[in-house]
Image 1: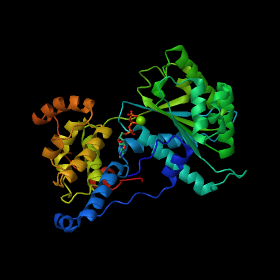
Image 2: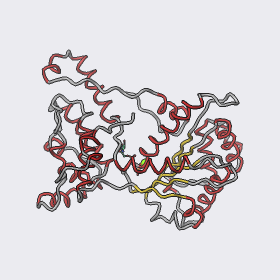
Image 3: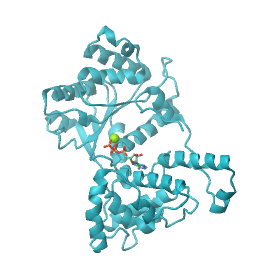
Image 4: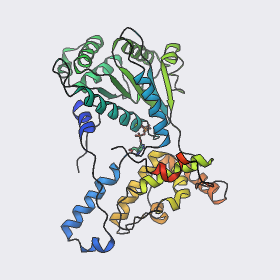
Length: 371
Ligand SMILES: Nc1ncnc2c1ncn2[C@@H]1O[C@H](COP(=O)(O)OP(=O)(O)OP(=O)(O)O)[C@@H](O)[C@H]1O
Ligand SMILES: [Mg+2]
């Protein structure tokens, strides 16, 4: 098993964009599993343990909605460099897929740019259509600029002891952006900035400066940006487009059909001997109660469930098996309330009537997967 470091270096980002899609391991029946020799069985199980946490991304309705807006922002930002470009800010609670939306959008953008313009820039440098950094606590102007330089592997980062100023790092970052012809900059986890504090305000002002100085479209992602006061600054409010991401809901037919589509698209990717259509859709209520419709909790439950099903030889994802799989505390807290509502019949997770053509569960279930 190879674990990649985060996508905050150009090498890992290129791999993420350039490597071919993983291949789903073949399905084996119980009899075929038993017929495998010990080494072959171990190899097969390992390939399944590698596969389930890395299944293809499901194109959920939330993702499609958010990416449509991101595309609008990026593609309308072709103005000359002296005009201010619009910024996209994905703003939602934890585990709702913000990073996945930003990364998959940026990967498609990157691949399209490389296809159109080639791997080298006019000046003979490797083309890097996207840079991507993640913030951490205590981010300052200088560390933000330094992180951008780090993404490109700029030599200044190794010579940090020379004590470059924030401005010098910003200059180096701009050099990298220009020579690599970068057009999109992702800054993830911007909630580590505290706009209501002086140092946070400084970073926000600096982001505004970068937005006007760097010839790139910025795309930010973070938790509860609105609540933390990111849009209280009038200039930010006028330049940043807020893109919310909602959890799944089962209060409407459309919401229930979206939930079913996610489950169906996931079900088809599960490689267990007893996996079959309906294995997960038949327990849609239970899955909703366990995860409160949070995509991060859902995938964590399914991934851990698959591991357990393989290790125990049960080779099936049943309600009983999943009941023994713990997930994040937030989901566990929501679980008791939802289970009570579902048992009392106050909520149901299955659609009560067929949906219109374009959103039938069957059709949207086929929208699985981008890489
Ligand atoms: N559309 C999707 N298809 C498949 N898996 C997904 C999808 N969206 C999210 N996930 C999985 O759910 C988990 C949480 O997603 P992600 O990290 O994107 O959420 P986040 O909102 O950025 O969370 P945080 O607030 O903790 O940063 C990840 O493991 C991711 O792989
Ligand atoms: Mg994230």
